Length: 318
Image (cartoon, rainbow, N blue to C red):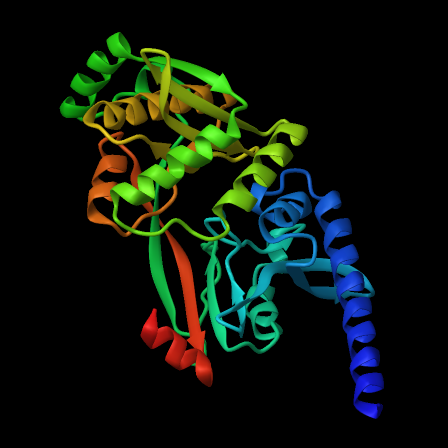
């Protein structure tokens, strides 16, 4: 009986603490002029679920000046702090650069977990060094904004140009709201790679798409061949970048060039918005080479992994 009362009090206390930190995070986000997409509370609600994320906050004279959101979940029954689905990295939320050194402190304030696997947007004037949290570099591929529209395709490889010329003759590209078809194309892409699609895919993709639409910062585009959708890409944007969030394609060689055509269209849209285009990262050599064929350049971000207790066994098995 006493244990039940203790657990109820503990749960109530944790809920109040989370409510306080989430409220402070939302107020801080609302105060910023050009926050990054992945820091938006609605993005975190969509990717993690309403109860699936929290934040650590740094206060100065009772005013929130910096925050770091994280996805809290369980993996194989073990507590986990990980990067949210469809999210390339989590980012320090702060009003100005003077708060950048607070990132290390906020990371140290994250609650203990069996599995800690977090990617972070790198900050050029901050050096993270903590023996307890080994940091590796991962790479995204970015095509920086160029004022001259002719420069958008200047880095395209000759092979890509040839494929695009042929694709333009064969396929039509249209904005779409058929998210169920896109989910099926994404699942098809995983099957082509002979790997299982993530468990969250069917639930999170539609939720993210609806939130992108309601905030007017995203678009689903499909490529059609003989009236049938054979490839699709989901993109989103903020004031800094246009992000390639997800892509899927049907089985068959024609779908590969259709995918390239969709990215070509997305790059032109990014130029119209005057943003960089972030292909997002992949350590797979074939995918990295594909992104680089557009002239994209590698951009480093941080990857921190740590395992405790049974988390070490989980890591060895995964």
